[in-house]
Structure formats: C-alpha cells, structure tokens
Image (tube, rainbow, N blue to C red; front, side, top):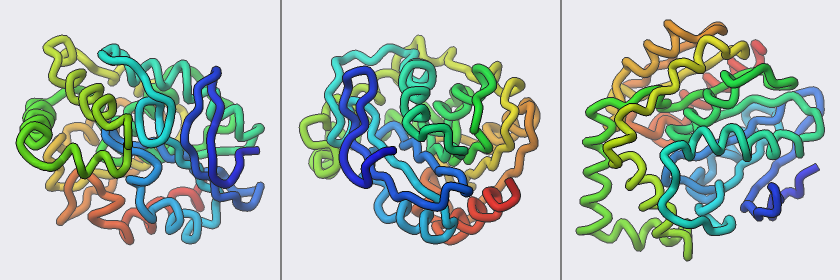
Length: 258
C-alpha cells in the first residue's frame, strides 16, 4: 500500500503523493488535480474530505507538477488521454484491488472521464467531476488567454512557484500552450461518455470562467451511467475552494449511496 506521505513510482517516474488511509470497506477517493494543480494546491481539501467521508484519500501530482519528476516541453495535445491510459492505471494498481472513486477537478475531471470511458475497470465505483471539460468552448480559450496575460504581466509565476518549485515553467506552459494551440480546438472527449458505467456526480459553479453549464448538460445527456448534477451559486472554476461545505456534503452523500 502507498506510504502516507512520499512518492509513487510509476514506470520509473517518481510522483509526489499524499495518502490518508481509511477503512478497507470504504472506497479510496483518488484526487486528480487541475491543469495548474498539485498536491499542495488541494490545500486542506484532502484532509476535510477524509474526515467527512470516512474514506481513504490519495492525492498526487502528475509528472511536471509540484514535487514530481520533471517532463520536457511541449506537451503532446493528447496529454490528458496519455495520463488516463498510461499513468492512471498504474496509480490504481497500487491500491491493491481496493474499491475507489475518482475525484477530478478541471483537467483532472477530463482525465477521469477518459479513463472511465475507455473500458470497464474493476473496482471503479464512481466519478466526481468538478468543473469538467468534455469539449472546448470559446470561454475556455478566453480564460486560458487571460491566465497567459497574468503569467506575463503579474506575479503569477512567483505564486505558482511556491507549489511547483523547479517545475513551475513546465506546469504553466505545458498546460497553457496546449490549450492555446489551434489544433486543440478539436479536442473532444464526448465519445468516451457513453461507455462510462460508474455513476457520476458532476459539479460546476455558475461563475466558472473556463466553461459553461453545457459541459454538465453534455455529460448528463451522453453518459452511460446515472448522472447527478450539482450547480453552485457564488462559485467559480474551483468548487472545492469556493463552496467547500456544499462539495463535501455532495461527495459524502454520493459515496454513501454507492
């Protein structure tokens, strides 16, 4: 089993990780971070989630993020597909057969959807998709251009460096350059949705500046499993930060029903 704090080894790559164990009869909640995220950028959410749900919680930083091993740029435009197909299965295998629920935010939610919709997976009991992207919208590109302006004109790099250290340029540019690449406008993972067989909790804020509620509508209409939608007022692109209590309550209820 995974050590409480330390690293995961995936095909010779060292990934930063935090693991809080819990009862074996409850699923492990696996946190998949956003495009600029890391273990530390979940803040106290993993601890709050473990306490509220009574479940084990695993958070890790993908390669090129946080204190994980570096990667080379440019990232391929298939980076979320690659993560879902080549890395996440190795992460799940280290749970040693325990049931699990994927809790993804933004890019992490997309990775979870690709993984779940690629083929049936033993032990996968549910998906929590927070601010998910299943296709590219104009608002998504506008938000990412705004982030690029902040990177170039404000102290955003310094603020991100506190979480990513020497990976800071790779973390930001790998994500930002990919989304702003003209070829990325055709990125669309709705074809994976009909093959998802695990129940889904889809969460989005009404004030999300990276996507509209059309994302949740597409998931609800196309997903092959039951979908529970939660739309939150006074909430932007990070529901777990902007409406922590509501998100914790929703996840706990979802997991209990599973």
